[in-house]
Length: 358
Image (spheres, rainbow, N blue to C red):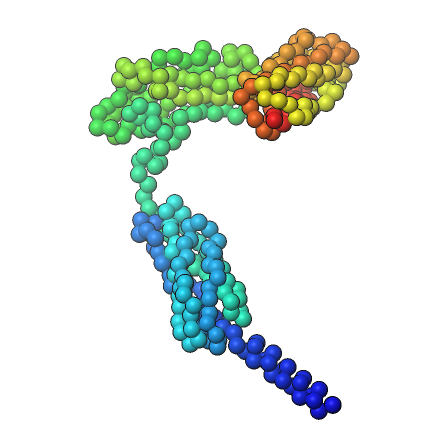
């Protein structure tokens, strides 16, 4: 009986060993290739990784996945017999990707070493950009890098200047004038006639005091080009205007107004499309001087804001009603209301309303 058990154990171990050895084995000639230095204009570059099945049963590549969309793999799709060879070809697209790179390709198979990572690397020399690429925004016959001038943060008593380069990519000179300019902006262009293939400089001077507003403000400057006043000939201008509290003394700050809301957010829950919902935020002045609402702005036209008053005495509460119109909206919605006051420590408060429209 003991001999029989021993014999069965030997047969079982032999079977297991045979099953383990009867597997494909993928062996690549190399798993890392440097593609060297090449120009972006040279286009797609390819590296081929050859492999051999050094196992005893057919090898199948189940999946080959690249680490990014710039890398495309191709590979042997048919089963690879024992001793036979196959390949994984990796193509790299350098368009818009100057500089050094290193990408990986993961190879999954039925081999005993079922996962192998291949690496390609190299360096792409940037091609010379066209004028249209360097200055992608069109303003009639002129080009610019952007068609918007931003003054991110400007104090309410400040005057600031920004410039925008204009390029004439035509074979004729272009005369530049201005059709409509907001009164708080001073705009010039030098030279007034930009020569063929030449450059000019648009200068915008922003007078925040003359703008007489607070918070985010946007405007457009409408140009005339060679006498034409097409509405498309325009440059946007935006600014975020903040009140200047730098002259306040310690005593002024101690007795300043203090803004406080009962909550900064409210969720209407589930509502039906077309419903109008309202919520009233409670604004309280917890300071020692009058609190003045400088400006209120909602994030979209679907949200109406109605403050009960703009000047709030110390200790007084003023309702701020927010009405949300769900017409034309669907799904989860989140809107904001920005309230700007003369609280020197917290001049900007953001109220949020949200809902789910069924």
